[in-house]
Length: 125
Image (cartoon, rainbow, N blue to C red; front, side, top):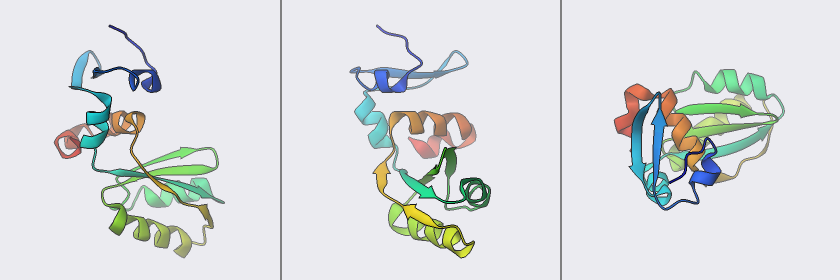
């Protein structure tokens, strides 16, 4: 048994329990937790991160937005539909996107989403 605040360490385990405020939110293998998260994380490097962050926080297609230095991590429900809307929202506001690879949500993003959307937890798993 191991207790760690580092989700990259937890991803190396065979079974993890995600906890918040002393309560277990999910228990499963890390690969299964990530598979249950249908949402996709889209990493966007852009020239006006703060403006993009504020703008996307108001958009329904951006389920979660996190700013990290010169990039935004945007969690969308459906990459095939929502990524284009996010791109159009940013470029329509004059924000230049330098790159935009899509990737599956990692355990850390999944956990943050669980914490920030407590009322929608059933929608996540």
